Image (cartoon, rainbow, N blue to C red):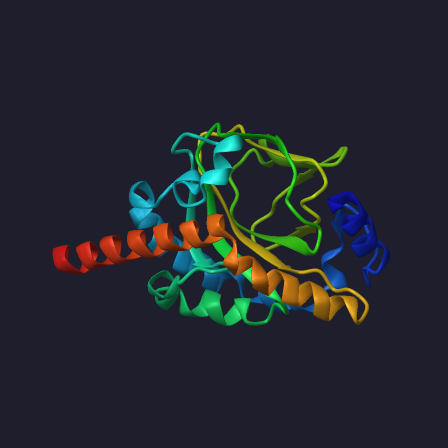
Length: 233
């Protein structure tokens, strides 16, 4: 059933079905790139608390299939079924720019520790596309890479990488520094009426038990962390 559904989505995709898209395909990408330093400035403040930020699998237990250590941190700003208002309140410029992305469903700072490897995997559904905005990309750049399908890609600070994460992909940070991107999922543009159907389907995902669980974990972490930070301040 999923194979049939994904083939159908690919057939009605407005921008075709490549593994990786030219950023110019989505005009909002250039608008975000133009103000990327505002996002970087907010990330710099977040990175002060890097060690206390939860690992991806601590929020979304399904991520345990690809990571179980504390080397991939996620500072959530938005997510299906998630209340991230405390994090979001501290990143107003980032949230303003995220508002330019039609159909944005998920957004977080994806923080990879030095020498972290994320093994080959694929996304759950091609009704969304993925946007990475390079924020902190260490040198040498060729040692910080992502394989999407059969091709290797590299991030650059202030530049976009947009791809379909249902193509098999794998990530390496073979440097001694942290790599951070603004990680965003957004509804894939489809011809009507399929776009409306897809949007409704993505909205219903908030009812999924695993996403409700993730939302509860995120809200609990935010409340404990920010209350503690205010108390210590």
